[in-house]
Structures are given as C-alpha cells and as structure tokens.
Amino acid sequence: MWRAAGVGVVVLATGVATAACAVDGEPRDSLVHRSVAAAAFPVAPGTEVLRVPPAQLSAIVGDVSGMPVGAHIDPSDCAPQAISAQPADTVVETGFGPSGPGGDPPAAYTTVITRTGKRLSDVTATVSRCPAYQRSSGLPVTVVQHSVELAPQVGGADAVGYVRTETAEGAPPVTTTLLLAQRGNVRVYATRRAVGPPESVQQADPALVRLLQAAVEAGLR
Image (cartoon, rainbow, N blue to C red; front, side, top):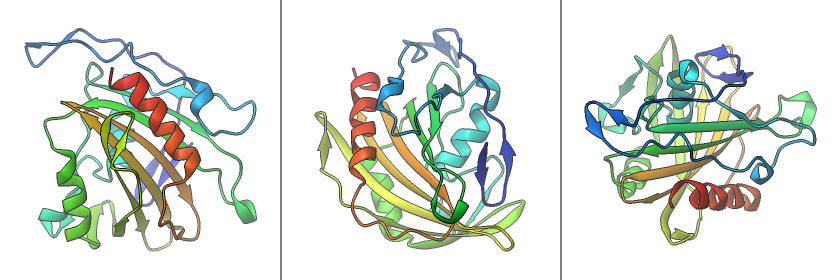
C-alpha cells in the first residue's frame, strides 16, 4: 500500500504501461521501455519491485511530487512542480524496504523517469523560498521542507535533493526524501517515503544515491 497524509490509500498492482509514441500530437520517443533494475532498489529480501500501471499514475506522481490532483497550495508560489501522468511520458517503479522502528510501516522506495519542460534549478529555488507552506486536498496538510547535501552531478547529470515532511491532523507524519537528476527535458527521481515520526535528514542516504544513479543510467540515456 501507498499512504500519504491527506491522501487516500492506493493499492499497487503489477502492470506494464503501454502507450503510443506521441503525446498531445507531438511525435517523440516514448519512455515506456526505460526502467530501473529491481536489484537497484534497497528493499526487503523477497520484496517485488512493481511498475505503476497507467490507471494509478496520476495518484502516485501526485504523492511523489507533493502536488496531488486538485490540491490548493498557500502561498501559491510555493507549489511544487507537478509530474506528468501521461503513460508515454512517465515511468514509475516502487518497492518497500524493511519495516520501520516501533512497527511503523516499511518505507517506500520509488523511481520516476519523466519528461519535463521545467528547470531543475527551479526546484531548489522553491524549496529555499518556501521552508513551510499549507496544502489543501481533502484534509489540510502542513508541509515543511529543506535541501539535503548531494553531489551537484550524478552520472554526468545535474542533481539536487530535498526532504519534505507532511503533517495532517489525526494522521502520522509522512517524510519523503527526494533526489532528482535531469539532462535536457528528461528528469529522474529516486525517493524514500516513510510514515512515522519526522526524520532529521541533512545528507542524502547512500542507498538512495545509488538508486538515483541507477535511475540516471536507465532514464537519461
């Protein structure tokens, strides 16, 4: 299961995204054949890494980006960059790590390979400008975020990282560490999402950096 504060539970099922090689009438190479090797995910032994099927892309990329469908952000200029839910433009894979301390649910590790017309530098600018903001999408959610230390390039691609913690009344906090790399108009994400007490993260976790490196190799070729 995938759980986010203020967002419903989405059940992940095995599926393979299939799509045409054109989006919005513009011919381009589809990304559906790019994927990160399951062995790169720091998941529990025997845990399957699943590709998110097209029907669930919208919900999952909303959780990854922090911008669920229909969300309202206050102040509005703190809105995170949305991720395309078009199957030809976005490939998402996810798996679960070991159970958390005190019986907390296992962390979810996710990779995203996607097209974007946005600059990576705008991501860090928004994080720096907006250390805290409010999001409304069903339940009101308080979001706090900060950058994490990460090499400025990974696999020859520009890279950035930040941590986002979401808190909603009556629900446990959700902390997501996001590492991003981009070359041209293709961007990759490697994320770790954990439910439970907020985590203090200042440096990128080496296992997550390795997952980002695998995403760069698979997605930015």
